[in-house]
Length: 256
Image (cartoon, rainbow, N blue to C red; front, side, top):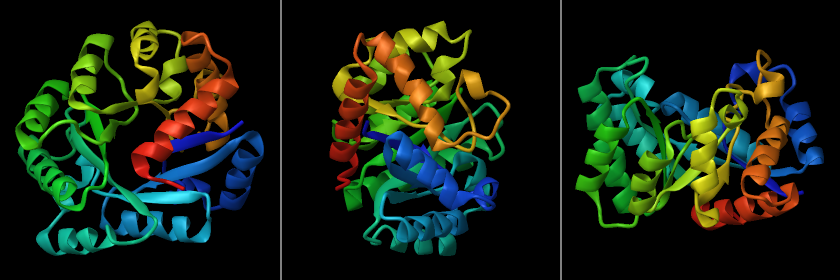
């Protein structure tokens, strides 16, 4: 099996005690590539450090919408320099989060527009975080660039109708462990309708473990449960879904 975890935070302190073992378990289980995601300047540097230490790991740099209130021009200038690192394959995660609203909405939007400008300048795909903000996100994305976008809505959490609007903009859609939750029939229907060439898999680990691991720290090996769910929804084998979604990830992020 050849799976790719397109969104994980391997540098987070939840893995400090056993990071090598977590990565090795995943590789032995069939997860062979990882995209390690930064959430602010210092966190992005840590994400890159893990990518430098493990050949299977790549990195993305950005500001999670929760952290946008802490961004200043000096930090953004330093973050922008990190885009030149050879293992940085994407801008992210960036976006809008109105569920927790840890940063003011206008600050989130201003920073998102900055990152969209970087997307246009540096031609690296963009990883979008969106929670309870899909309408505003659509408005901003439609204002900003020629279509189609090269990017992904990570940890997708809305319905099939909303998904179609983002597919029309060019985005890939990534599904994580929440797809397996018992009450998420609407999300499973969105996954069923997602075109196979736009499907990606992720964990968002250490968060959002799949149904059988709820209450535990998530890790990339657990993505197999999500892959099994996607395989059932698309009437394919797990191996076929693994190969398909890995090919999609490699094409989008230009990972070897």
